[in-house]
Length: 376
View (cartoon, rainbow, N blue to C red):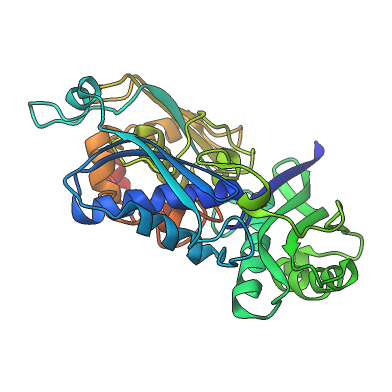
């Protein structure tokens, strides 16, 4: 079967990603002081206003205004002539403590830890790229990352923080054959022409990032909407947790619906999704399948999942893969311990995908248990 699959990425200056970064920066600031912090923090950004909402229970003493402004500044929104500027935004807080009923379910008197919510999570891995990620989202992320690198390094000083990329790949079965279409939309300064931006994308960005995947017949769209001067939260509203497909597998693997940013690891919609990715990677690395998708589901307060499912998409021995996966401990406490999640690492996960980038424990460095340890 031949088909074209498309995935999208966004730069760190996209309004939704700015909010994700604010939320994860607040999470890190609390965990750094108090590893037992319970954080579920959302952010909304529009114009010159940032709104924080959610629940935080922590012994940490955090200067939230400073954390918010530092996050915005790190992205590059520092122009005093724009409404959304790190030093000018007005910050409003609507934060309470975690509900006691939930707290008792999570931190149990026995010392065990229950799931912070009910829900279902997925993890996915495929052997089509070195990082075991689907090619469309992998390339889209690298293009977004390339835009940011060129902006911050001064190689393309006319670029501004906001932007989106999109990559379409032709598949034969599960094998990517070529990139058919690329879309790059990038914010820029007022003086730069469409022709200059197109020249930069075609002659510098795409060859460097796509390499051999850039073909003579690849269709390229650069700022197809025309001028893109007005961008970021100055122009559009941003909200935490609104880019869950770009955060995961670009639509290639299924998604349970829970966002990641701003949530401490007791929230299994984050921690269990990370662990499912790790286990899916292990299935592919062990040669049990070329593709693997893991689903897990929990009841709130539960110490163990209500279900674990393995799907190899017809690319391997599902029975052997399921037996292998049963050797992993999916309890919330075990996940946190195996992946080392009680650390201020979350700000670094925010941009260019939570998966498929080196340096995270769920990308290969976790410690298996049970039957998985025997096979490791």
